[in-house]
Image 1 (cartoon, rainbow, N blue to C red):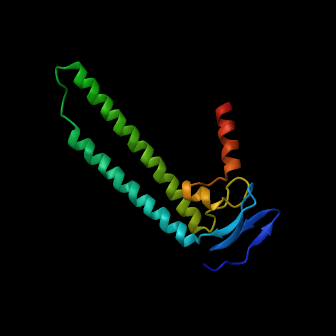
Image 2: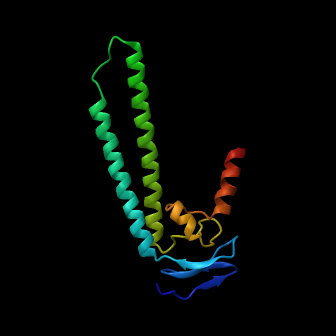
Image 3: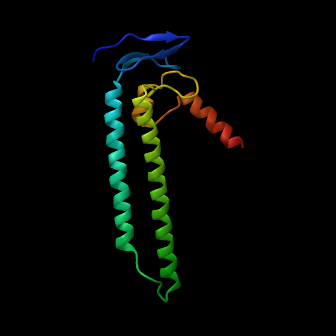
Length: 149
């Protein structure tokens, strides 16, 4: 991979495509994958979640029984299973929205740049959380803020 020129702005690193990056807290240097690489990975993850959502819907239809039985325990178990599937579907949809947001940021040339501070999000974080829009420090700050309220 060829590295493109990097514009440094007060510790911020900005560029599209492959760039050399500086880890915020660790002072590490490495290659930042291209936006196309990230976009491909995001699309694949979105496709996987779409397939998972479809499978959940199919499982829900196959396991669903019409009406209720005369056994309260079975009814409670069926209701709990339905709620569990609904919760998993909601989680998958939320993850899909996050991936779609990340794809829009990639299309706008902003993927891998923290929405709060403007610093580069380390590639290792993006490998672990492809839909990440915040660097570790800003994410921790938000979580601390929301936990306090």
